[in-house]
Length: 190
Image (cartoon, rainbow, N blue to C red; front, side):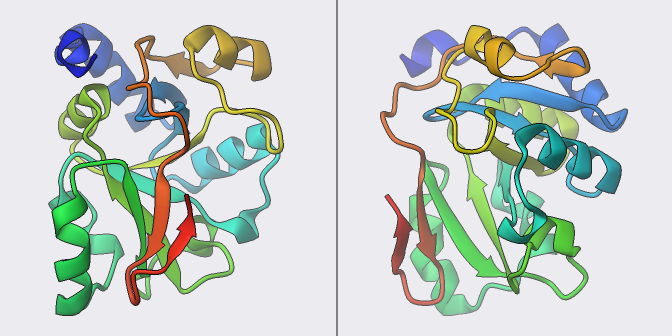
C-alpha cells in the first residue's frame, strides 16, 4: 500500500503548505486515520482547530514531523530517552517527551510534556518536508466521534469550508498510533 502512495502531487503538497503558512487548517492521511493539523506556532489556527474538534485545551496536542530535527526545538529529551525513541522513528509511534519551557500551553495542555511523532506516511513526510517544520496533528473528527479514515468522512463530520484537504489513503493501520512515555517507556495508549 505504501508504494502506491509514495509519490503525491507536488502541487497539492505546495497548496497544503501554503494553507499552513496562511494560518489555515488542513486534513491529511496519516498511518491510521485522517489528521487535522495546522502551524503549531499559530495560536489562532490551533484555537480554531480545538474549536472545530470540540477538544479542550488542557488535553494537549500531538506534533508530527518528517524528521527528528523538526521536533528538536519543542522538546527536551535526555540521552536515555533518545535511545528509547529513535529506533521507532519514522513510524506509527508517538512519544510524550518533556517540553521546552517556551512551548505554549495551547500545545502541551495541562502537561509539562509534548506528544511528538516522526511519521513514515509518505504524504506526511512530503508535507512536513515542504512546509519545513512540524505540524499539529490530531484526528480529523469531532471529539468522542469515530475518527475519519477518508476525505469523504472528514467532509461528513467537519465543516470543511476553510480546511484544505489532501485526499489520499491512510496506511491501513487499524488503531490510532500508540503513545508511549519517553521517560520510562510505559505505554499510554495502544
